[in-house]
Amino acid sequence: MNDDQLLRYSRHILLDDVGIDGQQRLLASHALVIGAGGLGSPVLMYLATAGVGRITVVDHDTVDLTNLQRQIAHTTARVGTPKVASAAQTMSAINPGVEVVALQERADAARLEALVASADVVLDCSDNFATRHAVNAACVTHRKPLVSGAAIGFDGQVSVYDSRSDANPCYACIFPPDATFEEVRCATMGVFAPLVGIIGTVQAAEALKLLAGVGSSLAGRLQMLDARAMEWTDIRIARQPQCTVCASRSSG
Image 1 (cartoon, rainbow, N blue to C red):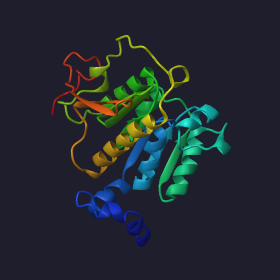
Image 2: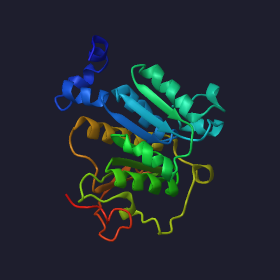
Image 3: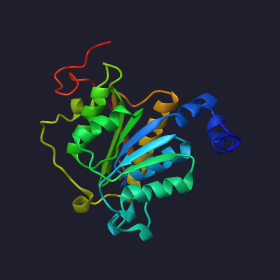
Image 4: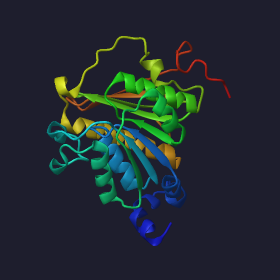
């Protein structure tokens, strides 16, 4: 690290659990973020401030006025511009030393195969089950840790699905692809503005811990937040032997 980096990241370096080695791991890491909206905004900003060396962000959408109630990476002046370009501008303003790869496209299964393979950690900040399952399947295939979050109304959830260990469940173990779930969107149900910030910040924290080798992750645990009461519920989750996505993983 150069003198500017030593100063910029000094508050991380002062932490015994991070130190020089942990910060260097962050600088050498590549994070893939799917979605640059409500969850993606705090995720991208905190990964950039923390010095994750390369951050790839994928989102097909453009900034809309209705996004600005909660999507803090964007501004009124950027309404109509691609979300990935807006987020990249915000991240570069915070930390010009971070490499941002902004991809304005839909993250379909075929594209995810290539994107996930090159990442050290994947953060799912999307807003639909189809994308979440596609991201999860790619992460299982390439054994990449996945940090997944969701938020609607006043309810949020977050977990880590780390398929590097055969003991850990994947996203499909908890939410099977063939199950029927009600697909709800912010456009019809609304969302409490700070909720996406809370969940997204937890996602960023889990990703940074994984990259820096700090503490233990949420793998095997699903945390659910009721923001009306500001009450967290922690649920232990297990790998399902019959899971159609991860059951075929070889052991060892």
